[in-house]
Amino acid sequence: MRRALVAFALLLLGVAPADSQAVLTRYAVALARVTPPKIAIFSYTISQAGPTDIEQRHRVYRRGSYVRDETLSSDGAAPKEAIVKVYRRADVYDISRVAPTQAAYRFLFLQAVSRGSHIDYFYQTTALTGGAFVVTRVLIDGQTFLPRAIWFATTSFSATGKGLLQYAAVGGHWMPTLATVDATVGGHPARERILWSAYRFPPSLPAATFRARPFPLPTTD
Image 1: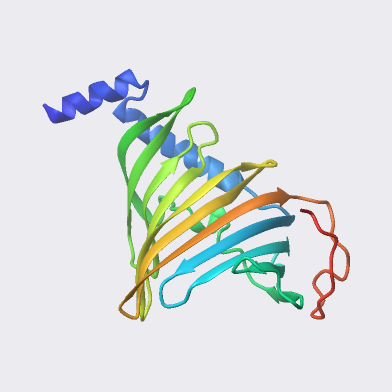
Image 2: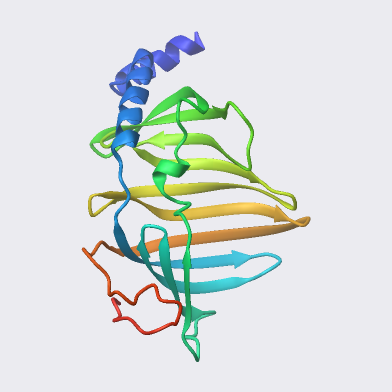
């Protein structure tokens, strides 16, 4: 009886249970087509509470794996001297790296979610192999068929946690907008929140952007 009621509810939303695999097919195609921006400039704020308390605002210039990270403020105040880090690191929030795939996960359709004029699709995911980062649920956007929200669990030697990543279309790219994590670190509770904003995708950056020696770049705020 419960299964029949669920099926009826899905039909009212315009989604039949049999269509869930078709959604996953479109999801796989959308993921295969997504490409990260060649160059991105953005701001992010990071808040941590727990063993270490942090409240910072940063501006980032990224070209591929090259990153320039400028600290704009810490605990509400601008630093007395420029704090600039230049390094190489893959984008761990790139949706192509984070999103669960049918090759690595089993997907169980949970429900259709009405959002404005269209419908999103909610799935439970079970990793086929373990790992330090495991996706537990995903909400697939009904227009782009890319992940709008990803729930995850993470485990390391001294910490465990659960969190949420949210994404949205920005300038023709699928970019992170919010990350939240509730964790236990060394037996102590901890929370972290990252908020991304002010995305820009210029065609180029000054040649000296990624030199090790810090230098000021024009502000975008």
